[in-house]
Image (cartoon, rainbow, N blue to C red; front, side, top):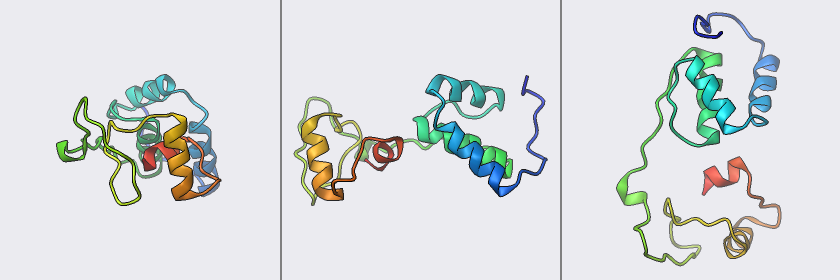
Length: 121
């Protein structure tokens, strides 16, 4: 369906914003299907897929996923206590009450687990 699609057409900034917002309502499998149709990289989280699709539609560029360096990954079976002075390592994050309470103490009561919030972590 979209195999012959090229992004050499003009979308207004309003149309681009509507598309960008609408992509957040899709499930990851649906975003992967769109990436596959556009021959885009199929690695990453929801925000990565959305950004990859949006940049392709806006600029025609195909961006690659970013590999997390080993130094930024948590070692298996090792606990890393949360504190405002330490980095949160990839793989150390848990979607539980204690983590949510900690993040609320840093960010404020408006903190919620959203795609942006998880990407920030």
